[in-house]
Length: 154
Image (cartoon, rainbow, N blue to C red; front, side, top):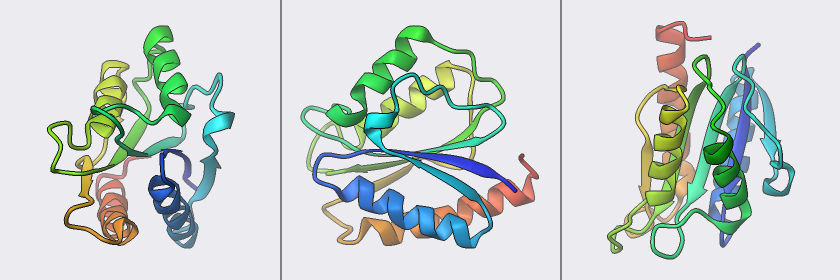
């Protein structure tokens, strides 16, 4: 059984709701899911024999939400080498800002710098176009799961 660590960063709760929705969907796909609350991320380094899925909103001028920013900065500062880690990123944002989905982009860039392997495309969900971000995320998750199975990525 595959295991995924599902991490979210949120300001108003949308990213948390998306993550909780995906948690339920992953369970129906026979994944073991560890939904990690932001306050529990201190010292967390994603195990390389498990998957990582990051769901984050963007705040301010393209900033990472405060609830996971410390974790982001810790990972960036400690720079653990993660060449066996497979991951996905779902970014929530508002395209009326120049820094649209920048928090998710920053996570993707950091994980790549750490040697991790993104599977599938980074999903950018635009609040100007999507009233139910969880629905877009669920569709993306189905495709992500297919990519994993087709490529037999463990």
